Amino acid sequence: MDREGRQRRHTEAMGQERRLYPIGVQTFEKIRSGSYLYIDKTELIHELIMNGTVYFLSRPRRFGKSLLVTTLEAYFSGRRDLFLGLAMERLEEEWAEYPVLHFDFSGTKYFSEADLDEQLDLMLSRMERVYGSDSGEVSYAGRLSGIIRRAYVKTGRPRSCSWWTSTTPLCWTAPETPVFRRSCGTGSGASTAW
Image (cartoon, rainbow, N blue to C red; front, top):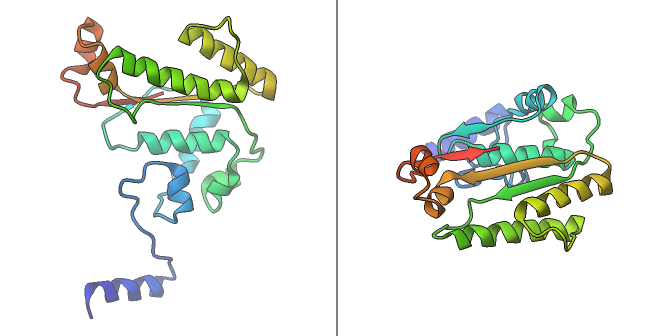
């Protein structure tokens, strides 16, 4: 019997559904909706949520930051359907929906400050379509503050912000800044998630 046949027979004997490894799949929703193999760490995530307020998470490339941040996003968006059969489903009682402000800087190459400005403007504009805008809010900080305030007024719930970025874009756009030279080195792609 060939290897695939043995694996299929073993899977059937164990009564387990055969699942694909999520190679290249980085979001919680895609993994859960696509029936990929998922190691349930939602009990740890629930503990993290219940016992803390603000976290700085720094991990190497390809180490699960996107998956963690999108899992948090699904939780705070009240997506109970994605947690069926996981520890989070039994641990969470309320399943309330919170406004989630997700900033993802990983999808673009940043060769200039203008590239970063364009992405920030696009992300804030998308959020302003949901929560509204004010013509007096011109700077990025002013626009973000307004979005957070209006999200709270609209929903009555505090916001959940998830920031996910690679330090590489910051290194490309500010290579002459001493703090970036120290933290980024050659722009190796070490990543940070907030």
